[in-house]
Image (cartoon, rainbow, N blue to C red; front, side, top):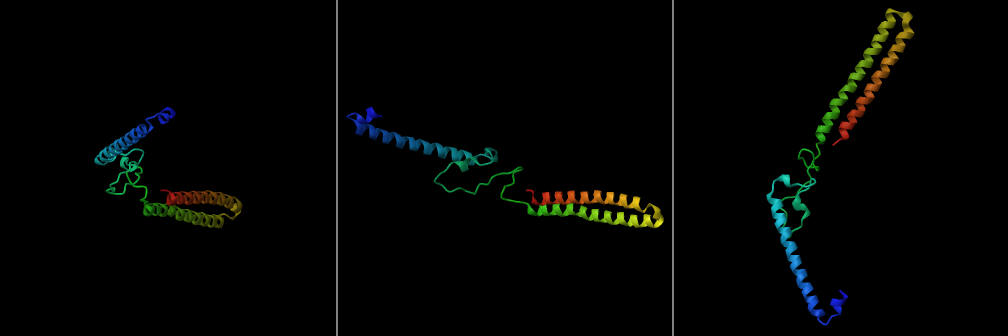
Length: 153
């Protein structure tokens, strides 16, 4: 470059560089226009990495519609099915009611067993507490799964 700028025809070289840059700019703009038109004419299968090809290329014309990121089965990420997650959580919470019913039946059986055979009071109470532990564990697991369903996408 020093030789070009230091030469006697430096002004001519600068003009040639400007012309070359202008031609290069026009070629790039034409290539982008062709790519954008090709991307817009293709089906949604032209998405690369979840984004439309045309969104990465900028043009002077306004886009026809706002492109969105595509999720798993073609649903936009901006759309969240909150109602479905609430329904899933509510259906899972029905099992907590089942756990409460089980605890009630467990203590009812304890009362009946102690009434029939008072001498086995300690053994029946031990078995009742073991059953109570299993039912509480089940209730906690159900509540965790319900929370997972509620806050998952």
